[in-house]
Image (tube, rainbow, N blue to C red; front, top):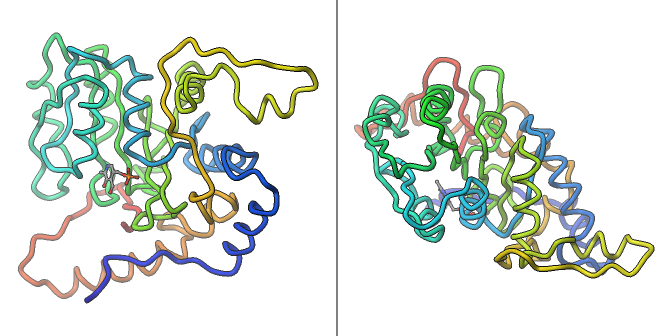
Length: 293
Ligand SMILES: Cc1ncc(COP(=O)(O)O)c(C=O)c1O
């Protein structure tokens, strides 16, 4: 049996995990904050919010985009089940649009026809690490006053021209499941340039608390939190191991340009391209560099 992928973990990750265990901060400690900064900087976004996996990232991003009961969200008809599940968890209805045969990504030419007065957001998926037509989708969203919540679960490191996925949509969600570009065990992150959306997601990922445990710990005065919003428990825990605990690992592992995981994956993909099996493999497009997922 050939595994789909194996995480690349070494002594540095073991040491980083040990450091966190010794620190006693087993959930939502300073390492999470450092990791958020590292992800935001890597993709070229203003802010990042780390959560327990990409499915919760998608859910929180939809809530931050103002999606709720009665709304419709347009997504591709071909994706992992989590894409549609997140829309349903937000109380909205997924509206499926067909994909392009070559890229397996949502066909932007079919998106506009699916928009109704109930549409609140567009949710393209960067399938198997290849970015969807984000710039075209952004233009459509702008024309219709919609938000773009990008499901980039397998796409950390993907490029569109000179921009990384994570810097182009209103909200972009990544997964750090062991099959992805880098892993934290289970884990996810939302990147955004919108400080209000990031602040809301920081609160509702942790029960809606108005301030974090870390802030309360750092405060010199007694500082009680308030709960004014419906929150969830989607924070990061000790199980979000190595990379989360070691922010520099993001540049060691992610993406196609300098990744120790990305490079072998690209080599394998090139081998498949050179040995056609009759199966229709995902193609790429000019100016788009996949993550190597
Ligand atoms: C396109 C897509 N969206 C969402 C997810 C869910 O990610 P997670 O397992 O981190 O919740 C996946 C997982 O493979 C995925 O491929």
